[in-house]
Amino acid sequence: MNMNMVEIIDKKRMGKELTNDEILYFVENYTAGEIPDYQAAALLMAICINGMTEEEIFSLTMAMAGSGEKLDLRDIADNVVDKHSTGGVGDKVTLIISPILASLGVPIAKMSGRGLGITGGTVDKLQAIPAYRTDISVEEFKKNVKEIGISLISQTMDLAPADKKIYALRDSIAAVQSIPLIASSIMSKKIAGGSNCLVMDVTYGSGAFMKNKFQAKRLADTMKKIWRGENRKITCVISKMEQPLGYSVGNTLEVIEAVQALHGQMAEDLQEVVLTMCVQMLKLAGRTQTENELKNQIWGAIHSGRAFEKFAELARRQGADASYLYDLNKFEKAPMIVPLISEKNGYVQELNAEKVGKISIDLGAGRKKKEDEIDRRVGIILCKKIGDKVEEGETLGFIHANSSDKIEEHIEELKLAYKIVANPVQKESVVDEIL
Image (cartoon, rainbow, N blue to C red; front, side):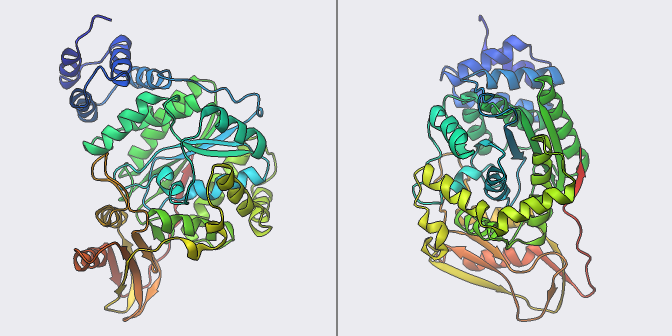
């Protein structure tokens, strides 16, 4: 194609609509290394600022999905189900629901990403399990789904490689909160991944990319149009992310919480999201029982130990030392674990997820630049959440840090994330709507 990247950048900077050929030119040449990061960053920022039409979003999605191999999983089952969250602080849902569903006979083929902005990444969490391989081949990925009913991997260079490059770049240039870029990123991976059923957890609030319900529903609508355009089944769950999900934020800490959840120990908000997502995925997979019957099946998989054993089987299959899952004390701990003590009596009215997410990144649990190394030991454990009663001298949470640098500052920041009031606070449902 006889095109000029500078002209494409300038066109989008002026708020004009790019053609399918222009978008394809950018995706193909950036993936091939012919377009440098600084030009790609300029275009992404112009998209972030000026947005895209539905036609542009569809073109970008299909160009990224077509930048590598596309899987066909129809030989595994009529319905292979996938799930995705648009991101949140403390969101370890994939680690919990995937083995539950696989233990119930629903094949799970999931390709995940690493942390983006203040939101954690499933790949980073999986890699906190010693020797777990997220970068297995496409052939091994399909073999695992076929033989044990589950595989959780990172994006391979064979599947949507354009998105893998763009995804990392977005994180480093503050271009994450963009409906066109979020929708095309998620859907390109999912289309390339080969599943025909998808349940989306579209989050909104202080700890999410979408800050309000209106934005979340717009994003859900955009993704549904793309997915249904491919003649596939989709359900979107709209959920709040005003406080971190569950009790832990940080990679190893979230793996530990996920294992505890698979043994039936779940925070109320995490349990609500897990059950909702599992039920919707079972429905898309063709299960026709009532919602209560499906929930009984889910609890049966947990209480029987089948869900946990499926997680351990997955870990072993992908090279991990599964003994860590059986003995959580084996996980390496952060050198410093410092408590935050409540200075008054009352009830938790607010626990700002965005502030908690930023603290966790500053501790080293996330990336400030795309090449940053993560410290998987560090993070935050929350002992009190919205609606909980607090007494003076009680522990609100713990900071897990790798050094004493700025620890007092982090404690003060975590204190500011909490708002404690005198009167009782009603706990609200996390799941807002199912579309």
